[in-house]
Image 1 (tube, rainbow, N blue to C red):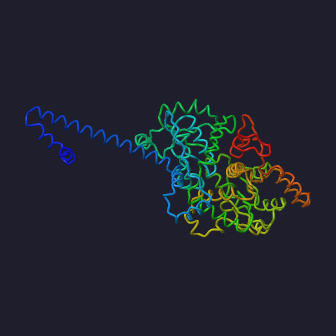
Image 2: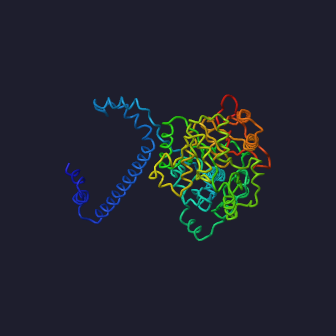
Image 3: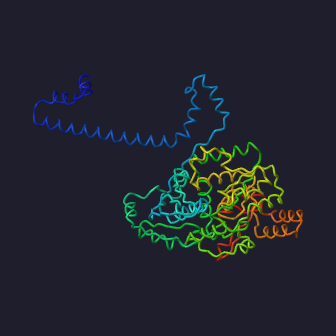
Length: 511
């Protein structure tokens, strides 16, 4: 009993051993052996305990959200009698499913892919979907994409200013590894200018990236793609490739909580006053200068738009015949033309019309006829106060993100030009259940408008023709138009991602 107590006390083992062993040399050796053996055992016990503890912590962290509530519910002693009423109330409240983080996909990393997106928000959005898909099928690591800061809009926003970057990374971890920045050694090399940079060929299929881009990544470790618009073909891709493009677009690219919350506020304010239509009135200065469309503009405005077109060297087309382009249906509808079309479609004048656009070129003068026909015109600037939008000023992509959210939730979405926002929103609304989107046939409409304005058609004839033309242009299920070797003229994948759409009324073959 005394020996046990001696061992239990600090230094007790040494004292006990000395007492029992005498003072010889062999006794000293035995003491040292026992000391070493004791230390080794203690070290092994500590190491084993540490490993077990860390294993338990990891397992509990992973499974806690799933099993915790079940364990607590199955343990009546965990709650007092007073807690039963609280529990009953909680049972009535719809539970929010816990966020499930997918397991990491394990693969041999072939290198790193950096990308610099170009264009406006929605062009960059589609490009990000393509770049994630390309990175996945090359088995490389993608660095969070860089957004365009040098275009007409000069928006300084970073990826994380617009999109929820952590959700973006974690939600795709079972497909591709995404990092916020390069590892330090490679980052230093890039900062010193040692990086292979190139624009990939437009409308390429995934085999181009396997055969041409992957060897470069394997050679240089890092490759930078400095242009990303329309770099992956609309068609001819495997089903898995197309589905991943959709997954990125509809699930991984979530706006920041600040943008999402403000979008919800705008939608709530609109819903309080009944149904609403989103009109994507693409009659802004940059679009008119780029397209050369000057219908309804005075001489000073025509000169201003022409100067702007020549000021941007990457806008290749300089000499443009506005009248011919309009007759070919290649110009955005003017506000005056839009007012006529909405009336011809029998859009109720009491509907709220939310203008999803930047500053309309020509201001109130050009908006007068539309405002007279539809007095409930609203914009985010009229629904929210300056303090709400102050953070977004001079950040056109963040403002466009607000318009995107409102456009998704509208009763009807009507774009007056088939630009990137019109296409991407159209496809997203199809994904949400083929929500009504009126796709205006501008080539036919400008001809009908001209006939009505010169008296060749009565109002009834004009209205009937407009309605008949758009009966099958309301975002119903349809097949993408495929034109081999002419990808610019065929239907855009993101406008109608049919591979990702659920079958509806037997009209569309789906996943």
